[in-house]
Length: 85
Image (cartoon, rainbow, N blue to C red; front, side, top):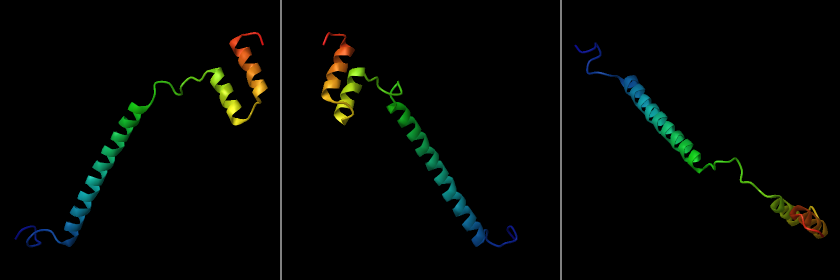
């Protein structure tokens, strides 16, 4: 008489073993994907938090968005470059 249950496991034993195996592989795959994503994002991240923009680029962006007029843009650009108007 083996384990008092005849041939081996009953239905609940098979269910628990199957569910445990699915959970194990799901956990293993999730950890692998998260590790891969973390390493991939770290390699793509630039060394600085943001590329440096010059004052002239910011001034040009403000002109393009319509925040300042062309006359003001030219006046501020000459002031930045230090030239006489």
